[in-house]
Length: 310
Ligand SMILES: [Ca+2]
Ligand SMILES: [Ca+2]
Ligand SMILES: [Ca+2]
View 1 (cartoon, helix red, strand yellow):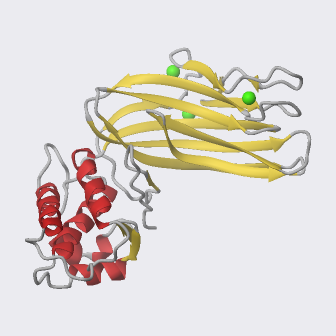
View 2 (view 1 turned 135 degrees about the vertical axis):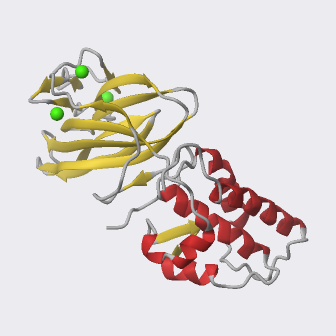
């Protein structure tokens, strides 16, 4: 199975990793096997409706080597914004890129006022950004479930620490339970590879599609771009390196240092299809910007980051 990869504005989006993926060095684990969550802090979100049946946040339960969070959103009166139960911890980590992996299940019951739909979700937030929510919706007083699934995602640490927040989130009239286990954080530090490698090894690609600017391309289309001679086309010079940089990021290289450049390249390309027509020459003002961004990306794609693994 190939990974899906979405660059987000804050971190690096979500990866559905193949089971065979190799993680780097493990830097944090929590398996809850001691059934002790006294080292985590319980909290709530949107606990703001006290008319019966009021918003309810149940005390998190550690049992059976897992932790269970449950919240029940109020019905019938304002605000109809649901409620969430949270369990948080801040851990120190050296700056760099990491992979979070955890097991989660979600069950959401539509418990009353059974008109229309409601929903719930369970996930871990890393510095406020949800990684791979387990979400479902249900109506007519039904129940939906997401069975236990291993979720993974990349994140960057830039200030020496990271907040993990487990959350079970219930919508209006929803009673949601999330069960969490096997939280693992590992360093993501594969050595980046150059565009020539990716061009010649399509079976190693971690994703089937990429977005350049706002346009999505299939692997076949991307390979066609990589095999088109540059011939003085600045958009191709940039696209070669942008494709390689995005493949490296999806391949668990350390992309924290290059995110801003990737975002700038995407913004410059915008909604235009590669190769951009009419041709942008490297010495035009826009061409110079493209060549400059390409040079920064190429430097990243060809670097051997400290301690990286092939
Ligand atoms: Ca513990
Ligand atoms: Ca466990
Ligand atoms: Ca509420």
